[in-house]
Image 1 (cartoon, rainbow, N blue to C red):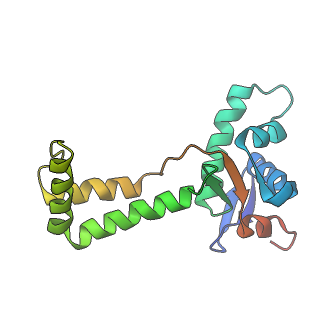
Image 2: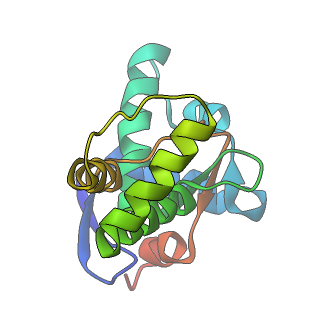
Length: 156
């Protein structure tokens, strides 16, 4: 395992597979590949596709967390955008819990759905929990970021 620098400039341990992913993306047109293309480029001879896929999934999450890659759904949504939206909702709920909870209750009544939280406090806690988790997205494209390119430079 080597050490690169993440998007914040801090040392970031990166596995051999992580380095291979960054190198494959940097060599690709426009710095992006589908997850299947990344898989084909980093799979070691003799390694099963299933094992490589699971390992690649973990590697991509780690690289994303370090700000070295962006994960996108192929349209306009990115994992960073999803995480930012979840944090914004949690901040709004925490700043004005009663107002946010009332808006939630109004929406549930409008949709004919029951209240799943029972109080403004539980509603805020639920949003904070959501914001703390890794967001989910059906990833169709992996992009190397400027920080990912910079991390591979010899001076990094």
